[in-house]
Image (tube, chains in turn brown, cyan):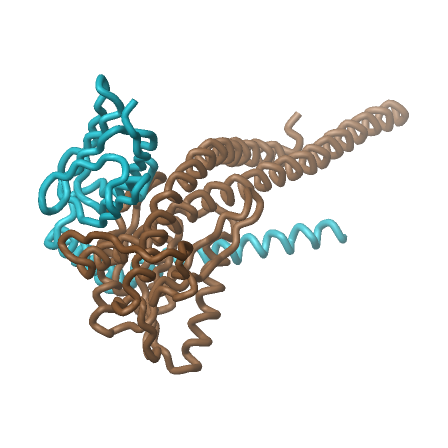
Length: 287
Length: 139
């Protein structure tokens, strides 16, 4: 009997989709664990640097680095961290929404914005809306390295040193837990002074080789880099978590759809059989 | 037993080593320095080379660093290691590369826009499907 061929074809195709989404969910789950460990592994470095900078600013209060000085803001730089691949729920769009809202409020204050973008998704979106992208890095993969983003950050830091931008921000998704990722905009430069409150009271100072300024300069660059890198790794964990959740709900939805279609198919089949029987009975009665 | 000092070697990506040692030999920018417990506080840049952690008389652990910063406090030595070789011109090249990629994307606006457009169409189609479904249910 050739009943409901369309429905059967449809069910088969949805089943295929479900297989794919299930596989993606499993992959995202296992990758998520890895990215989370990486996320934790980056913390000691930046907290160590922050600690040293705190000591330094305490020991040498008379020397202020340009990275610590606030200036009137005419132009800001934003480093936006996005994923390379899609199918990860609202992760990137939530981030873009936050960023655009901020751009608008800067626009009202006549503050120009320049952007450095990491990740394919950010490139195509920001390019589509005609934003000023001055640097980009894409296809960093699931385990990015610091070297991959040094160039992007250097472009921004150079602009900051030359006075082309007066503030630097980083926008990324914060990993709250597996179900929740929060878009976040964080100020990198100038480094806020409340982050630099010394924790030790006693007065002491380092010996410096070659001298304080150079070491501090090196340290601050690394500090900014490590913060951005931390954001990148966190964003990665968010991407996998978000993809896992999105793919899970996609698989569930596909299951529901299959159930519904199966019901429709069974009803159609039954109706056809009933009709055939009644035709036979009717035919027999007529004879 | 000799006095020991705590050693932390970390890079931006991971914690490399953490433990106690009798002596740490570090390739500082102006020559190798050996650090034992109660060393005066010191902050210096590193050059590429080997950090040797002497755990005890029998065991010395080598770690390669391509650069970074060394911080010494009386009871803690922290090595903030760079994984990659950092030199001004290499950084410069990386920056130029990042800029070039951005420009490439900007000039290639048409191709990317098509992609964005296709995605929009897809979203629209999905919305249509959903409406259809709802309509079918209510009927």
